[in-house]
Length: 556
Image (cartoon, rainbow, N blue to C red; front, side, top):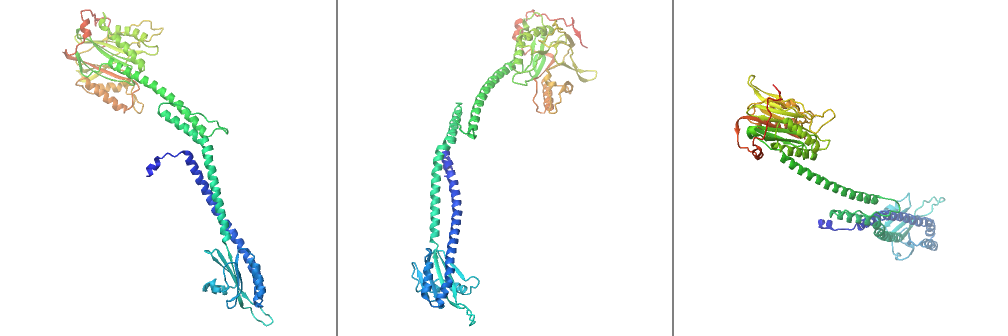
C-alpha cells in the first residue's frame, strides 16, 4: 500500500500549498490556544473581581438587615447584586440554615439549605474559616461559581458580648458567557484559517506556479528531451526583482546542455581517434613478426614487443638472404603513436624491397633508409636503427648502427668457462636527421666473429629506460647481468627471463616507451622448414654481397 502511494505523482504546487496550509493552521492553532487561555483567564479574573466586589459590599448591609430582622433591607441589597447579568441567585440563610431571603433568575431555591450547595467537609471548612471569610466553589460541569460567607453579629463592647454566627450569605454566578466568548474566538480562528488557506491556494496556483513550478516543469521537459538525445536549452524567466535560485538553476542547466554537447563532440572525436589508433595498432602489429624459437635456416629467433600506446614507434624484422645468410634489423622512431607507427610502415615498405637490390649491406641499407625517413615523416620524427647481416658459413656478423643502442653479442668463453656479453660498438647518426656539418650520409660498417651458439641480443631504449615506483631505471647494467645469468636452452627462455626480470623490477608500473628486444642465435645445423617466396623469386645470382674482409672494421 505504501509503495503504491509513493508511485502516485502529486504536483509540486499541491505539495507546497499543503505544506503552507499545514504550517498556517499549526501556527494559528498554537496562537488560538494561548489566546483562548489568556482570554479565559482575563474574563474569569474580571468576573471574580466584579462579583466578589459586589458580594463583599453587600455583606455588611445583609448582616445589619438579618441582625435587625429587616427583610426589606436585605432584599434591597440582593436586588442590587442581581443587577449583575452573570449573577444567577443570591440567598441569605439564618443561623439555623433556613431561608431568610432570596432572589434567583431560573432555579427555585426557596427550599434550599446549606447542604444543597456544600458537602459536610466543605461546611466544616466554611465554619472554621477565619483568615478569609469568603469561600469559593467552582461547578465546572454546570459552568457556575458559588461564593459564600458566614454572617456574624456586631460586637457589643458595652455588654462585652463577642460576635457570633447569625446566618449565611450565598451567591452563585454563571461562567457561560466566558465559554461563549471562547467559542466565538475559536470560530473566528477557524474562519481566519479558512480565509488564509484559500489565499494560500490561490497564491500557490498563481504566484508560486508562475515563479517556481513552470520553470521546473520546463526543466523536466528539457531533461526528458536530453534523455531522448535532443539537447534543448530551457527558456530564461523574465525576473522583475533580479535573479534567484531558480534563475541560477536554469542558467546552470543550459550551461550543462552546452557542456554535454561539447563533451559528446569530444567523445566522438576521441572515438574516431581511438578507432584510427586501433587500426594503426593492428597495422603496426602486422608489420612486426611474432617469433618464438623460430628456426630460419641456421638461426633461431625469439622476440618481445610491447607498445607504450595504441601504436608504437619500435619496429624489427628479419630477412633470409641467399647463401643461408640473414638480415636482422631493429629501429625506434622518436616518440610513439600514430605518426611513429606510420613512419615504421614506410620503413617496412622499403625493407621489403631489399631482395630487388643489386647490393645488400647494412651501411647501404641505412643510407637509403635515411632518405626514406627524411621524406616520409615530418621534421620532428627521426629513427634510430641497428642492422646486421650474419653469415653462418663465414661465421661473421656485418653490422651498421644509426645512433641505436649498442646490441650485445653473447657467447661462452671456453677458457674461463663462463658466459660473457660484449657490446657491438659502432657510431652513426639518426635516420632522417641532417645538419650543416653532416652533408655526407655514409654510415660506418663493421664486423665481428659470430660462431655457432653465439646470440645476438638487439633491444630498444624502452627496456633500459623503464622505471619502477622509486623512479629508478632498469639500466644496461641490469640487462647485461640478466643476459649472462645462466646458459639458456633456447632463445625464448632468454626472452622470458628478461621479461620476468623487467616486470619484477617495474612492479606493475606502466612503461613510458615501447619495449622491444630480439634474440637471434646461430645454430650448428640447418632447418629448412621456413621458406620465403621473395627470396626464391629474386635468388638468381643477382645478389652481390660485400666481401667481409673488405673495408671492414674488425672488432676483436
